[in-house]
Length: 81
Image (cartoon, rainbow, N blue to C red; front, side):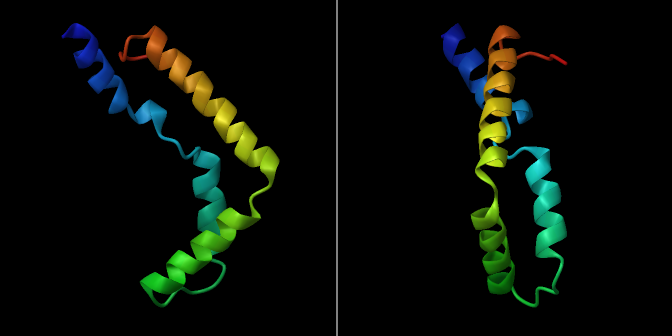
């Protein structure tokens, strides 16, 4: 049962947020370049930004996430820097 408690704790870790903070800043700048007047407009603008992301950025996000996952596992779901 202890395994499941640790697994559950790891699954809720904010350290495993799949979106790198770089992506949020890119989204904010590009999506807000034009005024979005509706939810649909916002969805479309966001999708376009994701479609234009260079593969290097996507690969770096994956690498960063794997490093975070390793740190979370080593810390057994606990705090780490």
